[in-house]
Length: 409
Image 1 (cartoon, rainbow, N blue to C red):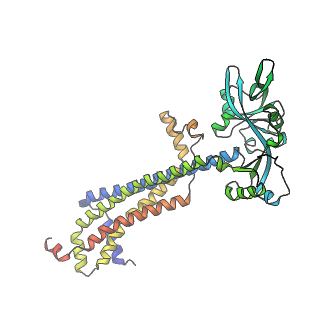
Image 2: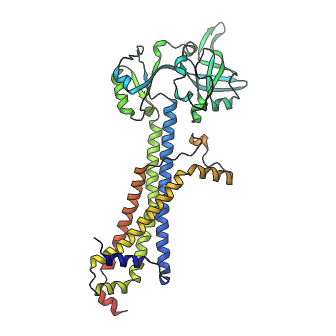
């Protein structure tokens, strides 16, 4: 427990006096350093959490949550299977192949996915406000392309493009690749430039004819009610299709998310050094305070104040500075995290620079996700460091000999 005397002396020592000018500067720098360290950590972790969440949402919104590929036999969908019905909202058959699109003098390699016309409108990417064209059907001679690809090839809805297959047909002059002209029926925007520039959709039967694919090679795309709890649901699907190859969106992007996790942990460790360096200023400040308050400490001891009370007083001073700086940092960090995209737009317009180029980061806006557990962890680390660095000066103050101190005053 903290006595009234200990509280009063602590508050008195915290008050600024003119003769303690240098000490006040150190305390201010300690406060600002810890506060900025906490704020920067919260901002960075929020942006990285937001980037990860946005990336997951874009990937999950564009790709199937779980894909089942056949080995030898054709996939048969058993819609009466209760465990499959319980976890999934859509079951769609698909196939894919690589091709080259040609428009005027421009050619580009893309991945073409095939869906039946009735399944095309079930895809989440075609049910947003950014979609242009007909999302209800995907007839035999029509193709749906990404926004970035439409820019690169100067295409709009209703234009025609030539697609060259990766398989060929035998002619009197040899083997020539298949070519087919498609009409652009729609243009989608996934939010990820890599997808918008490299993927297109056509009718499933047309795709199989174009790439000489067999019906038995069709994949089963499973869209889950909850795509986050993916490993458990993958096990359920694997049990339903024991002789098929089952993989998830997480498996397809495991290296990317592993890299993001490592980067987030490394950034946390590096930026924590800011707090540690700032916290060591508390040691300097308290040591100088002990030196300046030598006479006061001696008087307190001579009137019967115990050593443990002296330890408490100086320990509390360090903890109050560190805790108040942490609270300040939390408020500053959360505020910046909430308006980080507005700040980015402001700085970009003022200095005419691109602070978050979407061709590098795949996203058009800077995301931010405030995570309470991250804030709690950062706050706990900051307060713990402050507590640790406050112990040594407090113990040093308690070891002062009041007789020797007053003798030389």
